[in-house]
Image (cartoon, rainbow, N blue to C red; front, side, top):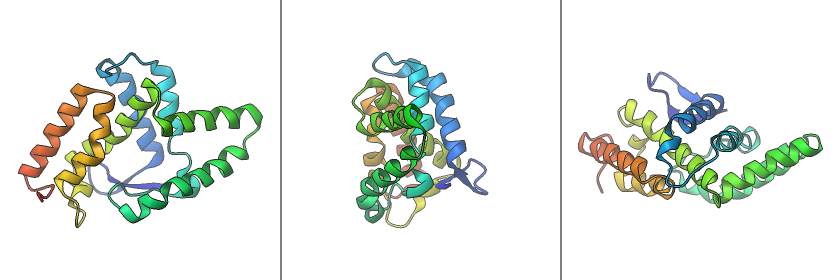
Amino acid sequence: MLRQSPLAAADRRENDAEHSWHLALMVMTLAEYADEPIDVGHTMKLVVVHDLVEIYAGDTPLYDTAAGESQPEREEAAADRLFGILPGSSGRELRALWDEFEARRTPEARFAKAMDRLQPLLLNWMAKGGTWRTPGVTADDVRARKAVIGEASAPLWDAAKHLIDEGERRGWARSR
């Protein structure tokens, strides 16, 4: 499944496998910046599983509000289908991980979600704005959609806001 985010080289879009691999590495290297202690191994499981439903549901562009409205229903149906075909405990374990990621009730799930929002931000930065240049998307939209980073890591959210502000200054993300 191809995602909307361009790679740093900006010559093609990232796929889900690359995205999840990037997130796993980010969890390993950035865990010390989590506001709450996290189990790194468990958090890595969450980031590896979190986008499996896109096999059936497809990628939902972050700034596509119309597609975002149907995303929960599409992904829930995809989760039922995907995890339902797996044998017993495997299907239940992966479904539980996916549900945990979606609910964001644990420190691990909040940090996993933060990495899921930070990683494309970094790719967009390297691609001189990337999807921030989508018509109708403003720097305020980027800030609003990335604010979840702050639920798990104040220092990483500060760094993210700096990049968004600088991207806006450089004209990569439009001001309102």
